[in-house]
Amino acid sequence: MDDLDRHIINRLQDGFPVCKQPFAEIGGELNLDENALIKCIETLLKNGILSRFGPMYNMERLGGIYSLAAMKVPDDVFDETAARVNAFPEVAHNYEREHEFNMWFVIAADNTGELQRVIDEIENHTGLQVYNMPKLKEYFVGLKFHV
Amino acid sequence: MVMNNPKMPEYRPDAVDWQLIDIIAGGIAFVKRPYLDIAEKLGITEKEVLDRIRIMRICGLIKRFGVVVNHRELGYTANAMVVWNIPDEHVREFAQQLAASETVNLCYRRPRILPHWPYNLFCMIHGKDRQTVIDQVHRLANDYTHGNARYDILFSKRRFKQRGMHYHPCRKTGDDDS
Image (cartoon, rainbow over all chains, first blue to last red; front, side, top):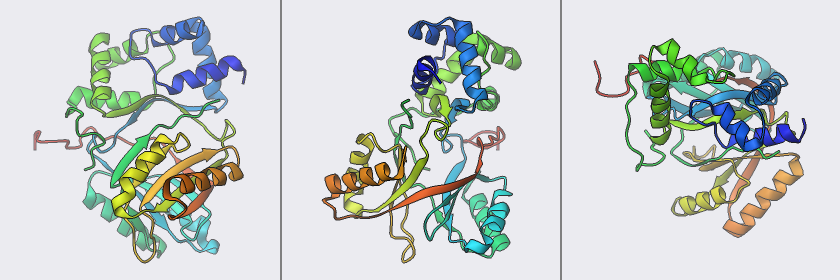
């Protein structure tokens, strides 16, 4: 990754222009030809440095709901439990964390009834309690990694 | 339903918006006029695509429009969820201080589940090493709670699943055809 890549990554995290020729606009800011910029971005995606290029939606506004759920999973059944939980299409991402509550995942559902159904099913499939911690208030979303 | 900003205008996506939401969820094409490509798929003009995306951004349906970086690839390997037990009457003020601190990426209030889980405020901190993250959390605790708040740092060990959300254009978003 060179300086130009760093400039591109930092710039793209500030937002992608919604105009006819967005790559030309960013290229203009970075003093870079449109085609060259497109090539650089493609390489960064291929190398796994950039993971996705597009919108981040407000799920609640789209009519769905999100919730964060946690479980206390015994070490000897952790991988098996992770596989069972991850098999649910409603489970969006799942992290192992160093804590008594060691499994943390996000559930996306159409409504609260659906959410509860998924939670009940996960409890049935794993034999473990699911602690549901829905968002009550969001204070800040500003995920940016300066490179 | 939690609104991020009650001042934002309400906007209910129509059928074309739902198609657009699904198409751009998969990512923007790396061509000179990516929105023209989308317009052709939808059978509308490029200008209409631009206008619809702009409206969805303005009203907060699209929170961010840009790139998602793979922070691990960039060397941010110490990723922590930091959880705090803050008295309800102070939680708003503290959360706003966290949000302004620049070390915190996301900040949510969630319910305590007593007696198992005493924490009501969650934030994410991504750092290049664990000690840096621990030092940052200590500083936040000292600066904003005078060391009085109970907190815990949950470093992530493994990530099992990460995918974009699925969007269902059939979802009922309001008083429509039902």
